[in-house]
Amino acid sequence: MAFLKNRTSLIVVGGLIILAIIGVVSSFSANPAGFIQGLAVIALICCVIYFVVRKFSTSSPQKKEQRAFLKAARRSKRRLLQKGGDSNPKNSGLGTLSPLKKNTKPKKKSPAHLTVIEGKKGKKKNRASF
Image (cartoon, rainbow, N blue to C red; front, side, top):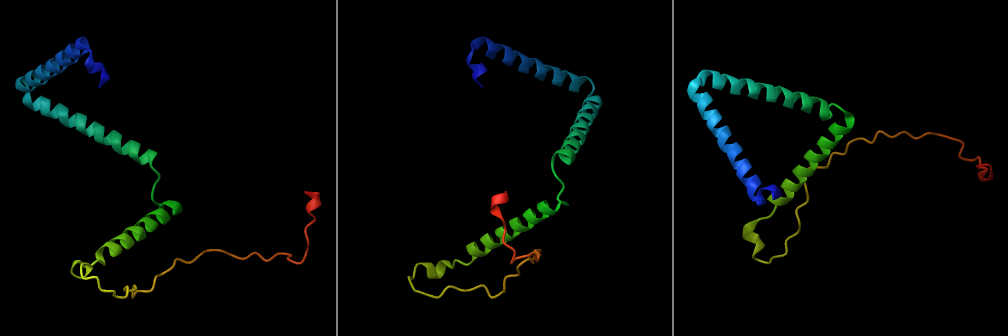
């Protein structure tokens, strides 16, 4: 707000704010139902514009990469919550050496969808032709 450092701009902005407040109060006192209806219409239009922009600007989570990212984020969050919940405040000040608890549940790995392409492995490439 560097423009408010100037005295004249401060007076102009303050005057506009005061005129806006007077206009809102006068329109509300003249026709309260119309004022509330106008506010509702403006809010509805803003919501529609917001959802249309959000729909077209962000990618849908139906994409494979987006779903994979969300899955990894959930795993990471769960892992961090498990790390934070393992600390025991009673035993932390005692200084005893106790073995670390291992996770009893086996970790479930997602299958790697990779295929091996069989080729001519015995044939040597002629690198001079490249």
